[in-house]
Length: 402
Image 1: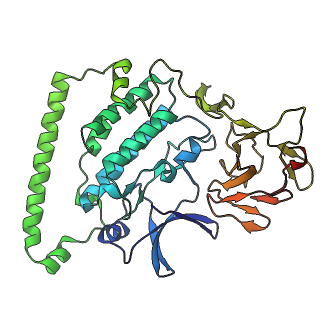
Image 2: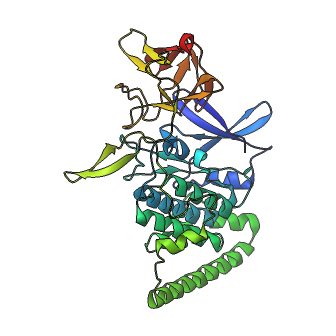
Image 3: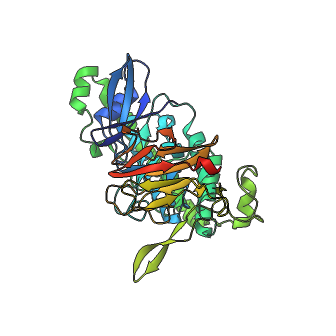
């Protein structure tokens, strides 16, 4: 699936190319906003239609989990909001297979500590008619990815992911089943009255005739049967009870190639930021950078690449890669400047050169006066000037000592 990023007038956008005119599914989303799903716009360029979503202020889940582990609270928020999205799509008969769930395309809003927001909307979902594969496959890949990035020391988190994985093994899950994995009562089914923007019944009758009333009657009877079935299922579940399987028994259900065995050490994560309760409030604690990095120099050899501030007040040695810059605690370099994003910039070592990637920063990044698009990669050369949301640095490759 092709993806394009664009920055325009202080806003960041992600664009999905489409084929021809907008389809009926996309048009339904445009006319009836679903809570939690990003609003979009369409534009034409080179005789091709693009669907754009505003991602200003949000960060890709994949980028955030490169520098820390995924917590249980964040997993619960993801499952809860995903269940709400699936429930909101039902009245409009939207195809779940077109819901984008790839980690690098699943965006989230974070607080000043770099954690997923809990007091408001945490995740931003997209809909793309050109996406291939089933919703069950996409969810399964997402859960397996979270297994690799989750805090392996949190037993309750691992059990939650196992319950979701087993649910996916039985088929495509319903929103009520996802909420049951969290141990919460499913909310009542969303009816058409909850969406005031939906086309009025009398207008449908005028357009399509009296068959609409008969079809609506069948729909109401079907919903009543579904509620009766769900009620009986909940009563049986409470009567019979469900035994929570031990963690050791659940490991056997996963692919050994994707998840390490129970006797292996849990994976480590870069600059993991965990939550510690101090004086009744959750604070961020930096546990250091324990992820594998590529060391390019020793103190005896010198010649380390670096970034030097324009006025020469500060020099940032780039002694290991990947190297992250932002205001989020636990990163490799945190400039004290209000214009810098929490996760602003990434520097990598590839093919004998340092590569720069803008991590969907709000105020942007420029190289030698040329603005970079969100998530755009550029190779750095000796003497390049890097503009970082108002801060200017000069890159020194240190090549004379390599």
